[in-house]
View: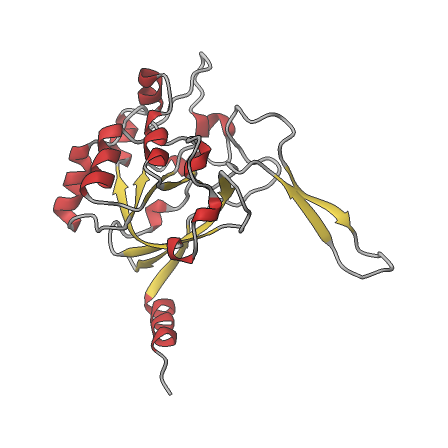
Length: 254
């Protein structure tokens, strides 16, 4: 007897690449500088081998919701925004579009993706489909896990990194009706855009729409620009404004 979903899975395992898009984390992994010191304690042993009650090992994990590769829910920035409770299994898989601006970032570390960049992508690969996850490739993931490099710390102490522009986000959400977006940097907004607005206006816009985003992604250079799927999963913790996320792509072989 044949079962369609089993056949599809067999085909995906045989004919496609499965690419990890999340970073491995430990006690030394970088996170946003505003999070208080002492917020991370990963893998503390609380029940060790040799206990007469039961021979096993148990650890505890303490970390902010916005830690490592993570998903942000609207309540992260929006007072009455929904949190993790509002998202179910139907929000775990998306068509994946990867917008590559690496060459422009090499010329300008502050580069913010433009609507023209996205239209150029669409001219080559077709329109971004409704319900897509749109990821911004900058190759900034190569700076992981160096905190100063991933933050783009300059000699004057300023942060300098690429990212999204507000018009680009407005285009993917209002014109193309994307479901979510993601990027390799710690923040949505290119640092120059954030400085100009005096706020993380791009992130606030995304979350204000009731959308989600995934930050600090990895390996976008190993994913086809179009035609892949993104799969994300996170702990089912009630009321979370953000959570570390395991995210991967099922992509045509390149």
